[in-house]
Amino acid sequence: MKISIFTPTYNRAYTLGALYESLRKQTCLDFEWIIVDDGSTDNTEELCHRFNSDLFPIHYFKTQNHGKHVAINFGAQKALGEWFFIVDSDDQLPEHSIENIIKESKKISDNKDIAVLCGMRFYKNGERVGGNLNFKEIDCSALDFRYKYHIKGDAAEAIRTTVIKKYPFPEFDDERFCPEALLFNRIARKYKTHYFNKNVYLCEYLTDGLSAKITKIRMNSWKGTCLCYSELANSSVPFKIKLRSWLNFWRFHACHKSEEVYDNLFKIPRWSKIIKPFGYIIHIMDLKIIK
Image 1 (cartoon, rainbow, N blue to C red):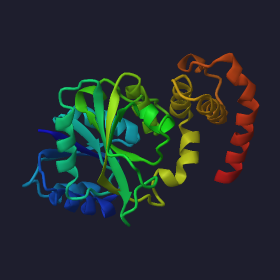
Image 2 (cartoon, helix red, strand yellow; image 1 turned 60 degrees about the horizontal axis):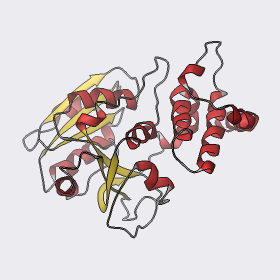
Image 3 (cartoon, one colour; image 1 turned 180 degrees about the horizontal axis):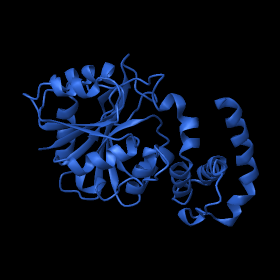
Image 4 (tube, rainbow, N blue to C red; image 1 turned 45 degrees about the vertical axis):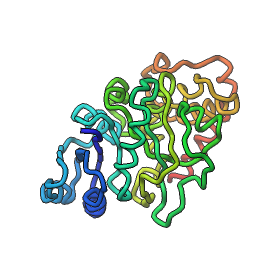
């Protein structure tokens, strides 16, 4: 099997049906669909059991509510496909999506330096997330793609299953969020990504999704958030990105209220503490906004 489509979901029964129908319309059916229900309280479980698996295997798992990153860790261990493709429960795939991903995978099948295939995300109105691009294909790290080539917007990544199993998200008992950038930045230190300018993903950002409440979510999961910013700041990125990352690090580090010491979790250069007060100021502004 070539592709494991992975969908984490929480109380999204009202959108899952549209994703299911888009999968049934795929021009290539060489995939399985793994659904991890992160403790939904709606009729998600009933709906998933009604889905017909005549065209492709469907594997449904229900877990306690631990967050999307923990669901990804779980799903990666269940995956049987060569590539692990995360598709959110409120999104859909254009009909040639899987066919195009498999075509691109054949181009780099023998190149073990490439661990990620990355097509483009489009809004359902036909516009690319982040604007139009003028390239056909690029092989580079995820960090270079964003900070060297200055390409903006979320993309749609399929990761070698053997690789994502080596890079699980950190799990903190009291947190239900970890930035996905942490995973891709870690992979970028060792592997390249094959970027191709084709629409493989249709998305919209709902008002009840993570994107709409991201500041509060990051504040409630400050350890995973700070770990992401500290690792980015310690990567080979332009100085202004390092500076911005440390500013955000101290911004969310200010959410740490207990006496428990976590400094061994982060590599913090002394100079970064100069901007700690500015991070705290932004933290105070965040508190006013989320009230």
